[in-house]
Structures are given as C-alpha cells and as structure tokens.
Amino acid sequence: MASSSVHISHDSLFSEIVLWFRGFERLCRVVFALMIREMKIRYGRSRMGYAMAFVTPAIQKGLLVAIMVIYERKAPVGPSAVLFYWAGLSSYHMFGFTVGKCLISLKYAKKDRILPIVRPPDMLYARAILEGLTNTVVNVIGFILIYIFDTKMALPGAPLYVIESMALMLMLGIGVSFILAVFCVFFPTLMYLWRAVSIVLMLVSGTYQIADTLPPAIRNVLWWNPVSHGIELFRLGFYPTYPDIFISVSYLTAWACGSLVVGLALERVMRRRIAAHR
Amino acid sequence: MIQIDNVSKSYKRVGGGRREVFRNISLTIEKTDRIAFMGPKLSGKSTLIKMITGFEQPDSGSVSRFCDISYPIGSSTVLSSNMTGKENIAFICRIFGCDTRETIAFVEDFTGLGTALDRELALYARDEKSRLAFALSYALPFDIYVLDGSFGGGSPDFKNRCETLLEKRMETSGILFATAYTSFARYFCKKVVVIEDCQLVEYDDIEAGIEHFKELKAKYDQGDAA
Image (cartoon, rainbow over all chains, first blue to last red; front, side, top):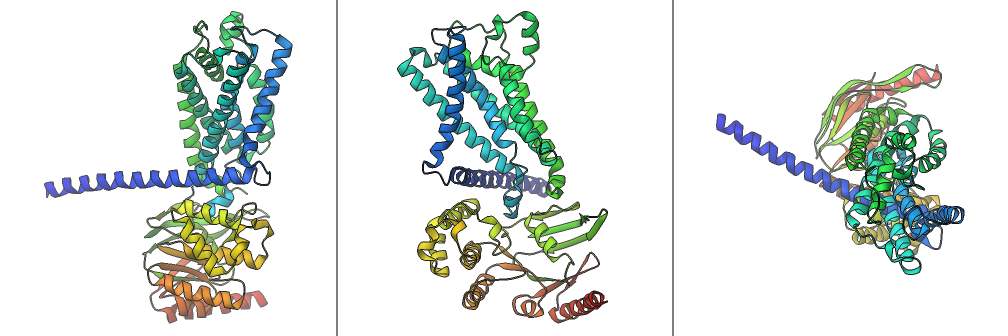
C-alpha cells in the first residue's frame, strides 16, 4: 500500500510538471499572438506599418534631449550633452512608456476574454514585452547615431549595467502597470492622471542630473525613488568615472519584484470584480 | 472534461439590487457529451455558456476546463475590424496553436470568399463577416464546440453546409448547444439540461427534457401575456 501511494504521488508530481509546461507553452503562444495583433492594429492604417511605433517615441525622446541640450549646452559628465540626456531618457522611458501603454490593457481586455485560453494578464504581458522590445530598438538606434555623429563614448564600456538597468526598469514598469491597470478599470481618470504624473516623475528621477552631485537634502529624498536608481545604473554603464555611491541595485530589484508580486496578486484577487465591472 | 462546481451568478440590476441567475449549480461535462441547454428567454442559457467559455466569472464556485474548448461558434467578437480576413485567421490560429496555412485554405474553400480575405474586415458586408466567423470557428480542432443560439449564419445554403460540417465535427468532438428550439436539441444532442429557477435539471432522456422545457416555456409565455 505504502509503495503504491508513493508511486501515485510521483505520478501526480510528474503530471503537475507536464501541466505546468503545457500551461507555459499556452502562455507563450497566446502572448506571441496578441503581440503580433497589437503590432498590426496599432498602426495598421499607416503605410509605414509598425515602423511608426519606433518613430513616435524617437521623436519624443529626441525633442526632450534637444530642449536640454539647447538649455544646458554642457553635460554634467562626459564630453557629450546629447549622450548624457539620451541615456537618462532611454532608461526612464523603459519604465515610463511601458506603464503608459499597459495602463489600459485590463480595462480594454474585455473583448479578448471571449477566447477561453486568453487570461486577462496576457494582454498586459504582450503589450509590455512589445513595448520593451520597441524601446530597446529605439535606444540602440539612438546610441548608434550618437556613436557615428557625436562621440565614441556611446558604446557602453560596461554593457551589463545597461542591460541590468533596462531589465529592471521594464520589470518595475510591468509591476507598476499591473497595479495601476487594476485601479484604472474602476477609475478611468487615472489614464489622464498618469500622463501628468509621468512628466513630474521624469523630472524628479534624476534624468537631467547626476544624483551624487545634488545637495544632500534633495539627494536623500531622491534616494527613495526607485526609478532614479535605474537611471543612474544605466549611465554607470557608459561613464567609467561615474559616481556610484548613490546607486543601490538591490533597492531597485526589491521594488521591481515587490511591485510585480503585489500587482499580480491584486489582479488575481480583483479578477472577478474586474470582469463584473462594466 | 469541464467541471462546474457549486457556481452562483447574479447580475446587478440597473435600478439597483441584483438579479439571480444561478444558485449553487454543479455539472460535469465529458469530452464526448452532446448537451442541449434549454430554458425560456432570460433563463440564463447564454450566461452559462459565457461562464463555461470563461467570458464571465462566477460570483462564487469554480469552472474548471480540462480540455480544448471553443469560443462561442460564429462569434465575431474575436475578429478585429482593422485587420484583414487572413490576418484575423492567422491570429486565431496562433492563439490556439493550429496551422495557419491549412486553416486559411479551409476557410477560403468553405466560404468561397476568395480574394475578399485580403480585405480589411471593416469593409466586409455583414453576410461575409458572419460566414468568415462561422467557418473560422469550425476550422479549428476543438474537443468541445460551444454553440450559443445558432450553428450557422448567412444564406440558407451556407447554413446547410455549416450543418453538414457540424455533424462531421460531432463524430470526434462534443457539443454544448444553448437553444430554445426543440428541433435543434432533438437533432444534435443526446442530453438535455433544463434551466429552472436558477438550477440545472439534467435529463438523459431527450424527450423528457424537452417536455419539461415546454412546460417552462408555456409558463413563461403565459406570464408574458399577463
């Protein structure tokens, strides 16, 4: 009897694992399909197709950089002002654009619930991954252009910092957008509020300054903002002499993981209420 | 297998309060079952279908799906109006993991839409759209096909072809048919589940189930008249 029960538990463990892998395969398939559809729909009528999705953020980023370059002329560190501001914005937008695009995905996922294997978070995953890839492409193209026309420093000396920063910022973006997307279903005004908040957040995250050169009073407050750590970490990859006393990767990681856990749990807890809300 | 376990569901009324649709219902559906869900108007046939396919969440209890179950057959909600017909087919194929080229060939052949499949869906006539929706949902290999109200649309000829196709699919798959027509239940199904007072009553004998449904319908029609 004992041996047979052990056998059964092994068997069920095995089938659990098989089920998990099947579920994962389903998730990948669905998210991929939703990504492709999102690409086709978002700029479907435009003749340029999805290339538009690269142009819009590139212009936005380029304008912000241009304003700062005209206003400040000189970068706080390094030879090129363009590189400094482009790097800061590249990192920030990995977070900011992701939240901006994913914020509404639970609110408008109603139509896709009719497909039995599509779960509400799938739409958010699809948008987040798409946004992450799009931003990566825009960033890389930007750095290549800076490398060609401005300074050779646009090739990061420590690319791992850059990749780490982008990954953590994307993760933080997904976590925060899960939390906000749940609230967005019940308070749609949040969509417009976020646009205002994101601009303020960009200014108070150290996109335009080096955190370590700020007065201590401001710096101590800024330290609590996880986004600023991501931005500083990103620049650390480009400048060998960049001050790194401020940066705490573990703090940023804790925020990224924490927001993801809270966001996923919140979505799961609220799923029935979201479905019933109209 | 689909397991409906102790499910309750109610909707908010516009004027306030709630309208109860289901109270603690349980039902087990096997892969090969052919079940007709019958009930008079507003009895909750569609709500049950929506809960089974996952569109609506129950207030309490759970619905577990252990097999590939279709979305409501012929539903055009799955189609995006600013993609072409072919892109729509490819999207559904990617979601369910089917071969895109085969499915497009099948739909092209079955609907006779031809070059229209390269057009954006917003430019489709209503008949073309419904033909595409039905052909697409029949093209995919599901374990259980779920039908809400109708099995085909458009011209009578197309409806007949849908019927033949559904019969072919029924050889290997189960169907769940929400309907208020006794002829559909007799023709397609082997079991009847009647919805009465927020409860499900199962009948293995089709005629007995239909008899029960007729009583309920008569009562409903009387109430309607009065």
